[in-house]
Amino acid sequence: MSVRLKGDKEISKVLTIKQKALQINLNENIYGTFAEIGAGQETVRNFFRAGGASGTIAKAMSAYDKDFSDAIYGIETDGRYVTQPRLKNMLSYEIELMEDRLSRQKHPEKLFFSYANTVATIDFSKKFKGHGWVGVKFQLDPLEGYNEIIIHIRFKQTNAQSQQETLGILGVNLIFGGFYMHDNPKEIVKSLYDNIEKDQIEIDMINFSGSRFTYVDNRLMSLQLVKNEMTNAVMFGPDGNNLLPAQELYKKNILALRGSFRPVTKVNMDMYEKAQELFFKEKTVDKKKTKVIFEITLANLRAEGEINERDFLDRAELLCSLGQNVMITNFQEYYKLVEYFSEYTKSRMALAMGVYNLIEIFDEKYYRHLSGGILEAFGKLFFKDLKVYLYPLKNHKTEELLTSENLKVHPRMKELYKFFKYNGKMLDIQDFNPDILDILSRNVLKKIAVGEDGWEEMLPAGVSEIIKSKRLFGYSARRSAKKS
Image 1 (cartoon, rainbow, N blue to C red):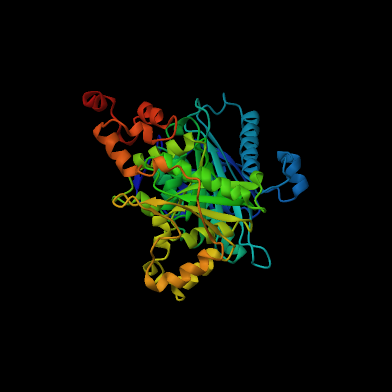
Image 2 (image 1 turned 60 degrees about the horizontal axis):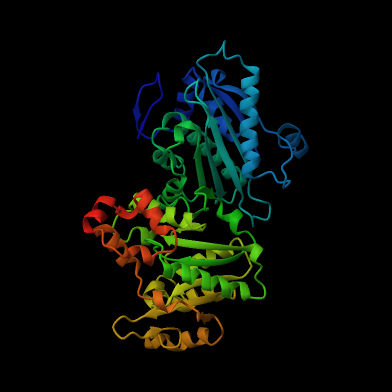
């Protein structure tokens, strides 16, 4: 991989942690502070060990005591310490302190940075493996503003010392990436695992900000995390900013809808609205403590070969414009999605799906890798009293509507299907809109591509205008004008 910074030679290989730290130390302009809380001072240790650190490290500190930490960085409104706001406060405080104490007239060429982490390593009972926030705030030109890269990590190792060492390596990778790979954010994401195995640590959120990253769409950076197998699920909100799944899903009721949403149609939104009505009728479901997720699987994004990033962003743009939370996952099987949700909540969960998806759930081929086969999968899927809200499918040849009452599963699955159906695990959505059942996303997409009329009426209000104004899904005003 190629990395650059003004005044340095170009390199085109993965460097060791010592080489990365030394290269930063030998750059006479890079100068900053390290503030590490919760796992020792492992990142700055690598810079001390590499040699030549006196020109790089302005200060290294670790305010472990909570009262002392509060005296420096202030008290967070939620009273917690391992949070993104805490990390951002640490980064900003250290930069402001450095700007205040060092004269720009004396150091006109200095590129200031602050690196910080606030983490909780594995507990003594080893039930909680730990997690943390890591970030760097840095300049690439003395006359420019600061850039920022913030990530959230989940430890996988079961030994505190190993976790500390891994965190130290990750910190060096992050600082090095910011200074030397800023022109290629995707490579920064990949480089975070340089000299680290993926079974050591999980990165489940990343956000880029600042003048050099104004062109970066953080939703696309989220996709890189799943694509590169750094995590199994990422999430972003209606404003397009990446969200931490653990924080968003914690103790929440969850209603999830899986689909391609290519593009999102009236059928998708009718399913969402009707399923949400059913979900809110459940006695234990509190609207204020409910999170609705529109989920797209990585397999769906790869349905036509390699992932088309423009196509992914088009889907994300529409769902965000409709005020929805979007999740990209690596879970092809539904039971894995439910298991993932169960890591963060014990509250009520439900899935909204079409008849075709339910038929696939009862296909044994998806569970051959499990020792208990489909029975094991269904045990994991429904053990949390999960509900499935089923949207009907129209047979366009016979005009028949397929529901839970008349759909056909494999003969071997009939008794299993009856068991779950008649135990209240599946509910048919009754008050659907029969006038929209002929709408298929693939037909809408085809009409948009060839400039055929009529696709606008198949989409929720306002969506066609967004597609046209932002030229999504290959829309061409010229092509449409020619057709008309």
